[in-house]
Amino acid sequence: MSPKQQRGEATVERALEAALFVYAREGEQGFTVGAITRAGALSPGSLYHHFGNLDGLVHALVQRWLERLMTPLATALLEADSAREGIRAAVRAYLDFVRDHPDAALLLHSATADRHGMAHARELRDAQEARLSPLAAWLRHRVTTGELADVSPSLLESLILGPVVATARRHLTLGDTDLDEAARELPERIWSAVRG
Image 1 (cartoon, rainbow, N blue to C red):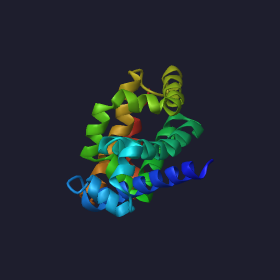
Image 2 (image 1 turned 45 degrees about the vertical axis):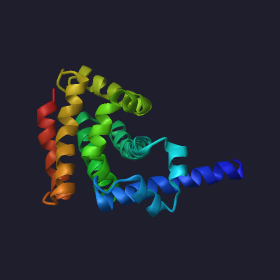
Image 3 (image 1 turned 120 degrees about the horizontal axis):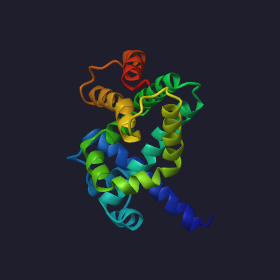
Image 4 (image 1 turned 90 degrees about the vertical axis):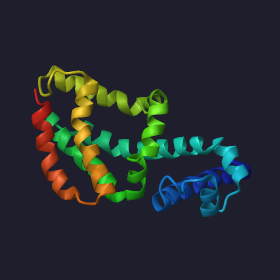
Protein backbone atom coordinates (compact mmCIF):
# COMPACT_ATOMS: atom_id res chain seq x y z
CA MET A 1 0.00 0.00 0.00
CA SER A 2 1.37 3.38 -0.98
CA PRO A 3 1.86 6.18 1.57
CA LYS A 4 -1.00 8.10 -0.11
CA GLN A 5 -3.34 5.11 0.31
CA GLN A 6 -2.27 4.74 3.94
CA ARG A 7 -3.01 8.41 4.59
CA GLY A 8 -6.40 8.00 2.92
CA GLU A 9 -7.28 5.02 5.08
CA ALA A 10 -6.15 6.88 8.20
CA THR A 11 -8.34 9.83 7.21
CA VAL A 12 -11.36 7.57 6.68
CA GLU A 13 -10.75 5.94 10.06
CA ARG A 14 -10.45 9.31 11.82
CA ALA A 15 -13.63 10.53 10.14
CA LEU A 16 -15.62 7.44 11.17
CA GLU A 17 -14.36 7.60 14.74
CA ALA A 18 -15.08 11.33 14.94
CA ALA A 19 -18.56 10.86 13.48
CA LEU A 20 -19.46 8.22 16.06
CA PHE A 21 -18.03 10.37 18.86
CA VAL A 22 -20.02 13.42 17.74
CA TYR A 23 -23.25 11.45 17.32
CA ALA A 24 -22.93 9.87 20.76
CA ARG A 25 -22.16 13.22 22.45
CA GLU A 26 -24.30 15.65 20.48
CA GLY A 27 -27.11 13.54 19.02
CA GLU A 28 -28.75 14.17 15.69
CA GLN A 29 -28.93 17.95 16.13
CA GLY A 30 -25.18 18.28 16.63
CA PHE A 31 -24.25 15.75 13.93
CA THR A 32 -22.83 18.19 11.39
CA VAL A 33 -19.91 18.25 9.00
CA GLY A 34 -18.34 21.04 11.06
CA ALA A 35 -18.59 19.14 14.35
CA ILE A 36 -17.23 15.97 12.78
CA THR A 37 -14.29 17.68 11.07
CA ARG A 38 -13.39 19.51 14.30
CA ALA A 39 -13.56 16.30 16.36
CA GLY A 40 -11.44 14.38 13.87
CA ALA A 41 -9.00 17.18 13.00
CA LEU A 42 -10.09 16.83 9.35
CA SER A 43 -10.78 19.31 6.62
CA PRO A 44 -14.31 19.41 5.21
CA GLY A 45 -12.75 18.78 1.80
CA SER A 46 -11.23 15.47 2.94
CA LEU A 47 -14.58 14.37 4.37
CA TYR A 48 -16.33 15.21 1.10
CA HIS A 49 -13.55 13.55 -0.89
CA HIS A 50 -13.86 10.24 0.95
CA PHE A 51 -17.63 10.14 1.58
CA GLY A 52 -19.24 12.52 -0.90
CA ASN A 53 -21.50 14.11 1.71
CA LEU A 54 -22.83 13.61 5.22
CA ASP A 55 -25.20 10.88 4.01
CA GLY A 56 -22.22 9.00 2.57
CA LEU A 57 -20.47 9.22 5.92
CA VAL A 58 -23.59 7.96 7.72
CA HIS A 59 -23.80 5.10 5.23
CA ALA A 60 -20.18 4.07 5.86
CA LEU A 61 -20.63 4.34 9.61
CA VAL A 62 -23.85 2.32 9.67
CA GLN A 63 -22.31 -0.33 7.39
CA ARG A 64 -19.24 -0.62 9.62
CA TRP A 65 -21.24 -1.12 12.80
CA LEU A 66 -23.88 -3.36 11.24
CA GLU A 67 -21.06 -5.64 10.18
CA ARG A 68 -19.65 -5.61 13.71
CA LEU A 69 -23.09 -6.44 15.11
CA MET A 70 -24.00 -9.09 12.55
CA THR A 71 -20.73 -11.05 12.70
CA PRO A 72 -21.06 -12.28 16.31
CA LEU A 73 -24.84 -12.61 15.99
CA ALA A 74 -24.51 -14.83 12.92
CA THR A 75 -21.72 -16.85 14.51
CA ALA A 76 -23.78 -17.43 17.65
CA LEU A 77 -26.81 -18.53 15.67
CA LEU A 78 -24.96 -20.79 13.24
CA GLU A 79 -22.94 -22.55 15.94
CA ALA A 80 -26.01 -23.46 18.00
CA ASP A 81 -27.13 -27.09 18.11
CA SER A 82 -30.85 -26.31 18.07
CA ALA A 83 -33.23 -23.50 17.14
CA ARG A 84 -33.91 -22.83 20.81
CA GLU A 85 -30.22 -22.55 21.62
CA GLY A 86 -29.68 -20.43 18.49
CA ILE A 87 -32.26 -17.94 19.66
CA ARG A 88 -30.69 -17.81 23.13
CA ALA A 89 -27.22 -17.28 21.64
CA ALA A 90 -28.41 -14.64 19.17
CA VAL A 91 -30.19 -12.65 21.89
CA ARG A 92 -27.08 -12.78 24.07
CA ALA A 93 -24.80 -11.72 21.20
CA TYR A 94 -27.05 -8.78 20.32
CA LEU A 95 -27.34 -7.55 23.91
CA ASP A 96 -23.59 -8.04 24.48
CA PHE A 97 -22.97 -5.79 21.47
CA VAL A 98 -25.24 -3.12 22.98
CA ARG A 99 -23.38 -3.34 26.29
CA ASP A 100 -19.89 -3.41 24.73
CA HIS A 101 -20.48 -0.71 22.10
CA PRO A 102 -23.05 1.71 23.53
CA ASP A 103 -22.16 4.59 21.20
CA ALA A 104 -22.44 2.44 18.09
CA ALA A 105 -25.61 0.80 19.41
CA LEU A 106 -27.10 4.25 20.01
CA LEU A 107 -26.39 5.18 16.39
CA LEU A 108 -27.74 1.89 14.98
CA HIS A 109 -30.96 2.27 16.99
CA SER A 110 -31.43 5.96 16.16
CA ALA A 111 -33.83 7.89 13.97
CA THR A 112 -30.80 8.78 11.83
CA ALA A 113 -30.07 5.11 11.14
CA ASP A 114 -33.78 4.38 10.66
CA ARG A 115 -34.10 7.09 8.01
CA HIS A 116 -30.92 5.92 6.36
CA GLY A 117 -32.10 2.31 6.48
CA MET A 118 -35.44 3.19 4.92
CA ALA A 119 -33.77 5.17 2.14
CA HIS A 120 -31.13 2.51 1.45
CA ALA A 121 -32.83 -0.72 2.57
CA ARG A 122 -32.02 -2.81 -0.50
CA GLU A 123 -28.45 -1.52 -0.67
CA LEU A 124 -27.85 -2.30 3.00
CA ARG A 125 -29.43 -5.74 2.60
CA ASP A 126 -27.30 -6.45 -0.49
CA ALA A 127 -24.15 -5.36 1.35
CA GLN A 128 -24.97 -7.84 4.13
CA GLU A 129 -25.98 -10.63 1.71
CA ALA A 130 -22.97 -12.82 2.47
CA ARG A 131 -23.84 -12.67 6.16
CA LEU A 132 -27.62 -12.94 5.74
CA SER A 133 -27.75 -15.88 3.32
CA PRO A 134 -26.47 -18.43 5.86
CA LEU A 135 -28.92 -17.04 8.43
CA ALA A 136 -31.80 -17.40 5.99
CA ALA A 137 -30.67 -20.96 5.26
CA TRP A 138 -30.49 -21.65 9.02
CA LEU A 139 -34.07 -20.38 9.41
CA ARG A 140 -35.33 -22.44 6.44
CA HIS A 141 -33.66 -25.57 7.76
CA ARG A 142 -35.16 -25.07 11.22
CA VAL A 143 -38.61 -24.55 9.69
CA THR A 144 -38.19 -27.69 7.55
CA THR A 145 -37.24 -29.77 10.60
CA GLY A 146 -40.28 -28.43 12.45
CA GLU A 147 -38.28 -26.65 15.15
CA LEU A 148 -39.53 -23.23 14.03
CA ALA A 149 -43.03 -22.19 13.00
CA ASP A 150 -43.77 -22.39 9.28
CA VAL A 151 -44.06 -18.67 8.60
CA SER A 152 -42.17 -16.45 6.17
CA PRO A 153 -38.48 -15.80 6.91
CA SER A 154 -39.15 -12.05 7.21
CA LEU A 155 -41.82 -12.68 9.85
CA LEU A 156 -39.55 -15.08 11.75
CA GLU A 157 -36.78 -12.48 11.67
CA SER A 158 -39.19 -9.88 13.07
CA LEU A 159 -40.45 -12.21 15.78
CA ILE A 160 -36.92 -13.12 16.83
CA LEU A 161 -35.18 -9.75 16.59
CA GLY A 162 -38.08 -7.36 17.19
CA PRO A 163 -38.20 -7.78 20.97
CA VAL A 164 -34.41 -7.59 21.20
CA VAL A 165 -34.25 -4.39 19.15
CA ALA A 166 -37.05 -2.83 21.21
CA THR A 167 -35.26 -3.77 24.44
CA ALA A 168 -31.98 -2.33 23.17
CA ARG A 169 -33.67 0.95 22.16
CA ARG A 170 -35.33 1.28 25.54
CA HIS A 171 -32.05 0.55 27.34
CA LEU A 172 -30.19 3.10 25.20
CA THR A 173 -32.76 5.88 25.39
CA LEU A 174 -34.40 5.49 28.81
CA GLY A 175 -31.81 3.42 30.65
CA ASP A 176 -34.51 1.54 32.56
CA THR A 177 -33.94 -1.91 31.07
CA ASP A 178 -31.49 -4.38 32.58
CA LEU A 179 -29.65 -6.18 29.79
CA ASP A 180 -28.83 -9.18 31.99
CA GLU A 181 -32.49 -9.63 32.86
CA ALA A 182 -33.39 -9.25 29.18
CA ALA A 183 -30.81 -11.90 28.23
CA ARG A 184 -32.40 -14.29 30.75
CA GLU A 185 -36.04 -13.59 29.93
CA LEU A 186 -36.28 -12.77 26.23
CA PRO A 187 -35.05 -16.05 24.69
CA GLU A 188 -37.83 -18.15 26.23
CA ARG A 189 -40.48 -15.54 25.41
CA ILE A 190 -39.25 -15.40 21.82
CA TRP A 191 -39.00 -19.18 21.64
CA SER A 192 -42.62 -19.55 22.68
CA ALA A 193 -43.62 -17.27 19.77
CA VAL A 194 -41.59 -19.02 17.06
CA ARG A 195 -41.33 -22.69 17.97
CA GLY A 196 -42.81 -25.22 15.56
